[in-house]
Length: 533
Image (cartoon, rainbow, N blue to C red; front, side, top):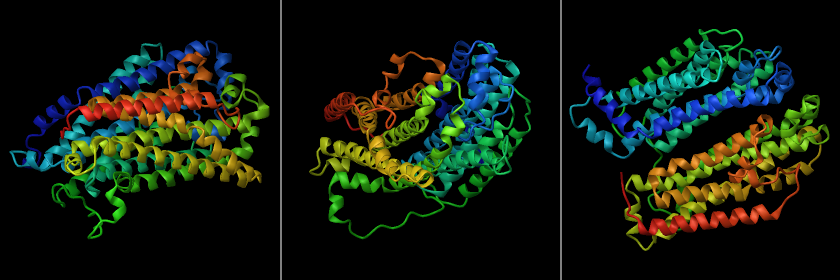
């Protein structure tokens, strides 16, 4: 038991440090679950209404993006919620756990704080154990808060408990996966990227598996996401698939503990590649240095978005046939009429890509905060580089990378569409359509820069912009949400090209907002103290 000594003290410390972040995550997911439940009741009050809107659940696109479609042959409001909306809340729970474990393990080692803690009367396995117990507390709170919230709207309490337990089970799976990744690499960003890549692969495998056979195939069961969805909540409830989640999480955690004892504190199982003896002249500029530091993330996102774009584009030829018989409530998100479903679909995919690249932009700007926390900013600013030059270069690198990713994802989607339709014009059309989202993405990055300059502790609030914008933009037409909600986020101001015509006014307005936010962030950063925490 010496290896676990002081675990309770570290657990209390973790909970104390996360007294704001964890409740925000837990309550955010719980409230969104309750919100979708209430919104669906208001939007579709009768059985016929829900039957009409659920008719698209068996289409390839819906299965790929939502789930296997249990209960959609004779749909109920509860089954529709579980099959069409729960997947995104599950992904949110997984992300909560990924970030939590990285923050309390690898990031602490990278900053040198774990070595100081272990110099006391603390067991070698105590930090990892405390981090996993923190995740267990967070997921338990999610089950309780989410079940109470959903059952409070009138949904079946037992089904609500099973649904939220599925969220927590997936969260614990990715907590354990992340714990394993944190032993492999010695950098927090790399560990986060590896865990996120596993989540993306799980999403893709589940989607392809569900497309292969009705209600999922053997391939689906290779994805942890499928284990939570195969509980058939609100239709034919069964708990046993969650045993797979528990077993897999346990196995991954055992692997993490084995690796903890086989590596040095602060080091990873895989040693980083040694760099050149001397840096190139290009790295003397903070902008090129910022790009170099994010090279791995940029390449990873470029590959992932290109694969996703090709996949989305490959649906173009069959989209009209699959969606042609949908009710008007669903057609509205694809353009509102059967004659323009293809353009509406491609525009919606562009909106989705803009949301994903907004997340990349936030993570890219967040590296400034990580550099400051690690104490690497002071030596840089001790040279001739100014504060504005250092921060501005980091923001510029995030902006430039985001623009490249938008163009690349547009080309990939256009190429996929061109291959199945025989129309090469889609490549250029979709590249321009996706690049039209640049001002919205830049506003998200600029707000992140503003928060970093003003108060880094509140940096996480910037996630509200893309997440809220995506949810409202995607589900707002179905749930009959007021138009002004979409105007509260920059993603809602860009025309859905190629369905809608390009409009310069919102582009100019968003660029001005982005410029003002960046200027405010730079001014605030010049006046505040540099703090390594």
